[in-house]
Image 1 (tube, one colour):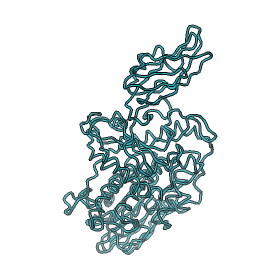
Image 2 (image 1 turned 30 degrees about the vertical axis):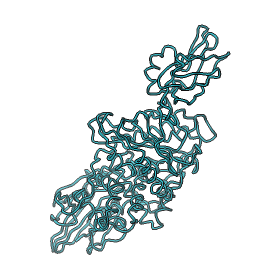
Image 3 (image 1 turned 90 degrees about the horizontal axis):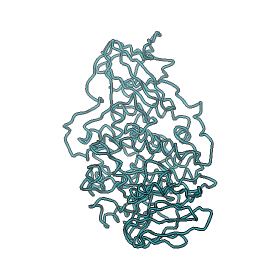
Image 4 (image 1 turned 60 degrees about the horizontal axis):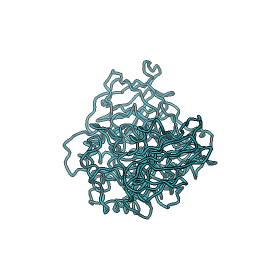
Length: 627
């Protein structure tokens, strides 16, 4: 397998006729040399490994750049590029050598196109060292990056905030490189992932390939592109926009760095423990891995603000101190932005969709938070159990939540409407940690964005609902009248008589649409109802097409409808503007991991299935009186 170094790519191409790891001489035999090309720092050495049938000799074409010993040890002499000729009898090969500055501490593979093949080796210098982290800087980074003091401050915050918070919740990462620390690479390779003139930015990533050995072990097959250690990759400052025209000031990068570190550390912990501690047969499902990474951001908000979960946090709580506002802007607001993308259009989205959209991420975070709160055992045992499991996806979540997982999903759908908006609603229809309607009324968001459909008497409303999600219908009933509201599969009608329902404010009735699909709803002065049509089946990718029609229903106004007024007064949080997410990069990366790396995990076997006793199994209807 060939290695690329940035300075050596053109050189290697020019030598393509005579290099390539295997070279054929006049006798038709072969000689193999690895690595090729080579990146080495001034004063450092790299040993060439040669496979040949006879005696081998080495010579440098420019000893002023690099020398080579009779044993094949290449020593960097000065910055530049040269070649080493390796000969064995009538056979020869040429190795491209790139010598980088002497302050380069190590070279790393930063190829994001492949997990194990065609590694792109570049040099890194040590920028800062902490108790639990080593920050390293790509020698190719643009000018105007972080100062030494700024790097050290990042290391300090990692040590005092991110590390203890993530490790307490999820467990410690492994230490396969025996350095006692996590390596964080600030590299232009991350900047290069964001094209010019797009509405998204890639802020960093973790790549599971770095946990694999180069050669096979009893647990894992070999991955030559692995960097053999616990690490992840971060955006580098680029104030002049030299990479794809995207200006990234040091302040801009600094504002997102700590939250991204918290996010990526969860990925590292999750993958390393699944590979080496939990004996899992595969990686975690993408939606759950991402949801847990966003939980890591939330947990760091609590640690930084001094607040905690299940405190129904609203604006008044946050604006009580600048520390809390700063913590929310740094760790919390992005989760609200992503969840807002889900609330704007729930039916086609889902917390456990097989994609990496902002809507999926936001819904997964919210469902995990709701589930931990409702389970009541505390954050640490709940999230730790999810990370330290050999199961994955819905099976994993189902084992931690228990047989009520389907009911949790159904009630979470209702809570997205009723939370802090419906007097007397049951606790299971609330979000204990966040006052969403109040926080979304901040100018940073412009109002609670949940998509709610108004029922018009005699008109049919249709929706296609993805498994895990719901559609919302609001209507009133005039005093002395009785409304008939029916739900059916799209293109069909409900023939049976409606079921009489009388509710007080805050009360709800929940039924399976397979048995009851029509309600007779009595009217009253100012009566207001919401019908939540949910599809909480525990399977990804399924859909249910439904039709809803009401007769004798009336229009309603006022709360708790979504509030999208742009002119809300009062102080504002930092607006969430990353509408485009990361352009699908992380999903592509995770799928590449699973395609290339899952077959390298020596432990085989499928995850268990969801227990048949878990309910519900189809479309559910929740009718709640809200006024």
